[in-house]
Length: 229
Ligand SMILES: Nc1ncnc2c1ncn2[C@@H]1O[C@H](COP(=O)(O)OP(=O)(O)OP(=O)(O)O)[C@@H](O)[C@H]1O
Ligand SMILES: [Mg+2]
Image (cartoon, rainbow, N blue to C red):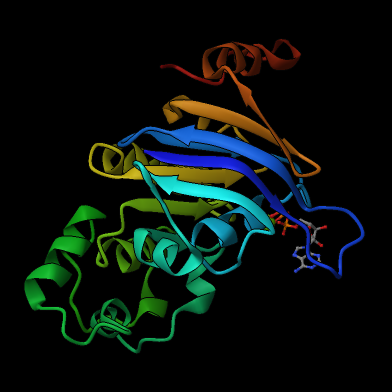
C-alpha cells in the first residue's frame, strides 16, 4: 500500500508550489489514475515517487514504513513519457540488462513474456521494433528490476488506436501482479481499467469517483458511449 501524506514540492526557483499538500492512498494490485492538464505537476509527482526528486515536505509510506528518496528508487520503476527515446542498448538483451549485467537469461525471458514480447530474438535492436513493441520493451526494462510500484507517464501518448488498446489490455493484465500509478492528460484510454482516480490541477490533487467519471465520459457531447465495459 502506498500512502502520500501532505506531500509538497516547491523548488526555490519556482514562485508557486508545484505540488500542494498531496494525499493519496493506493492499494496493492490496483491501478491508480491521475488526470491533469499540461503543467499541473504530473511528471513532477512521478519524479518524487520514483526517488529522482526530494519532496519539500510531507511523507511517503510503503505499507507502514516511511521511505526516503533512495528507498523509493528501489521500490518504484518509472516509465517516462516516450520511453523509447531513452533506449541506449544495441539489442533487446542489452537494453534489459543495462545497469544489471548480472541478470540471468531466465529473468530476461520472464520480463519479455510479461509484456508479450517472448517471441522476439534477444539480438533484435530496440529501434527495429514497432511503436507498441517499444512501449512494451520499456515496461519490461522496469519490470525486470521487480519494483513494487510501477509508475507510468502518459503510457499511451503517440500510439495509434490499436496499439493504445493493446497497451491498455497489457496494463490490465499487469495489475494482477503489480501496483500501478499512471498519470495522463487524457483519461479516455485508461479510465476503463482504473480502480482509483484523482484530478491534479495546479498541483492540487482531488480524488474522483471512477464510476461517476466513466458514465460522464461515455455520454460526452451526446456521442455514442466510448466504453463497452
Ligand atoms: N525543478 C523545477 N523548478 C521550477 N519549476 C519546475 C521544476 N520542475 C517542474 N517545474 C514546473 O512545474 C510545473 C509542472 O510541471 P510537470 O512537468 O510536472 O507538469 P505535467 O503535468 O507533467 O505537464 P505535461 O502534461 O505537459 O507533461 C510546470 O509549470 C513546470 O515548468
Ligand atoms: Mg509531464
